[in-house]
Length: 79
Image (cartoon, rainbow, N blue to C red):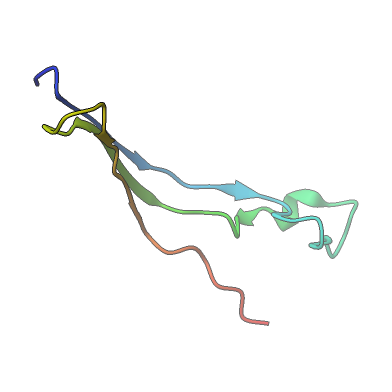
C-alpha cells in the first residue's frame, strides 16, 4: 500500500487424517493400521492468519507488527 504500511493475510481450508496423532496413541490392531484411519486429533478445518507491519509516525525507528490468528476448534476426545 505505502512504504509505511504492509500486510499479509492467508486462509486455509483443510482436513487432516492419520492413524495415530500422538506417541501415546496405540492402534487396537497393529497389523491393520488402515482400520485406525480417522480425523486426526490435530485437525483444524479452517484457519485465518493476518499480520502487518506499520512504521509509526514518531521519531526513531519504531514499528508495530500485529499477528492475528483465528481458527475453528480441534476435535475433543471423549474417553
